[in-house]
Length: 479
RNA sequence: GGCGCCAUCGUCUAAGGGUUAGGACGGAGCCCUCUCAAGGCUCUAAUAGGGGUUCGAAUCCCCUUGGCGCUACCA
Image 1 (cartoon, rainbow, N blue to C red):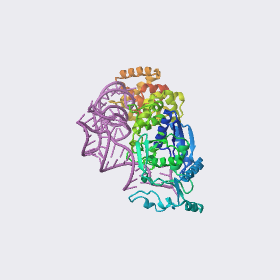
Image 2: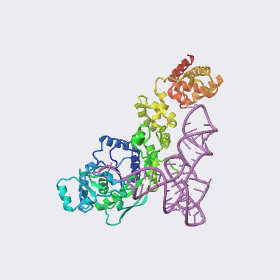
Image 3: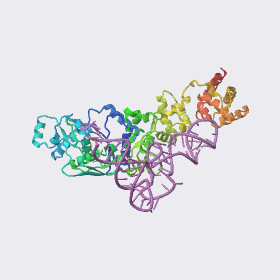
Image 4: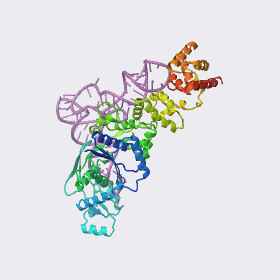
């Protein structure tokens, strides 16, 4: 039985890299008909906040994928304590009484990396017990095997054969001096206790895996299988950080920008993974069917954003495609809350009629506000009168067109075909080109040159509104 | 510094000894057209460098360079 977990620590918002890790775990679980477990790694009480936990849930909920089991490490502290002392009892760990901030400088710089404090590692059982009983603070450290020239080895499902000499692994902590478990310890104990079959996580944990394998050994259990994922990085090559790169790193930014959850999931999947054919737009079901670790890349993927384009153009394109593919009713339902949040009151039936006119013109849900605004307002915002002037024409032509249109529209049948034939006939009668006829009308009713197709727009706007707006345009031209 | 990992168009990627190095996004152009889109077509642009192995390397090996990660009583 495949069991995978996503284990964020609540020290910030949901990062897009974390979201992608969640998605790959989820895809693998669904693909293998296994279980997806959400585990909150909150062993560092100092840094965890409720706000952060809420924001992670918000992000995960928006992704709309779900999970099967939920755990929180702060509920399981006793388990980590018990397991740590079991490890100690088996001789795989020792008490280190070195004071907290003792000589941290000596650790790096020089030739060999810092491995352990030999004095503490060699402390006799008696002295260790005595000092602990006397209340002297200590951290419980893993005793990495050094007597043999052993190497820790494993086969990563993405990166292949991995190997590291024990002499390059330091004696890491299991329990802090306050008794709380470290990430390494709690994570492994939980992975063992929850019977996690595959650990799928960021490549930043690749080197940590050697330590984890030693912990699993000390715990007396088989290691899970590992699959590390390439990291998401910024165009400057640095890893994505809120401080340096701003809101682009947060999942909620994309929700707020008007992304459809699935299209964003689709986008994230394409970063560091490929179905190996030319498919890019994929449904959730397709993603599940085709996902595998063989398709995962080994090099980091750049999220392509800049000051001018804060959102990766590929994400935008995928979203516009997803919007285009949506049934009109569904798109209208997605649009309604956006329109309402902007303060417009619009009847659902009307929005349903507007939707097909803008469907292929919006890249995000939020674009409805800039593309269809003139449908929502009672009064058009002021616009430059010069806009009314058609190509290769003048203000006089605009006036003639609008006056003529005004009369024609009073009696025209307000349907696409009706308006089409009436307005084209008027153009011919006036001796102007169709475009010269349509443009002044478009600007009069929309307030700008760029807008959805004219006849449908007039139809949805309705005769009354159209006549009022044309009158206003005529007045502007006469002034 | 030590250890580990990585390296194909600007970006995401395909090609795992033999291809004019393919696709997508972006950009440019053309077509379509009532504007804008959408759609169609064309163009743009890559195997980091150097050595090997081989009849033949983007592909295998080594070195260099560059990038990333770990090196906490953070996760």
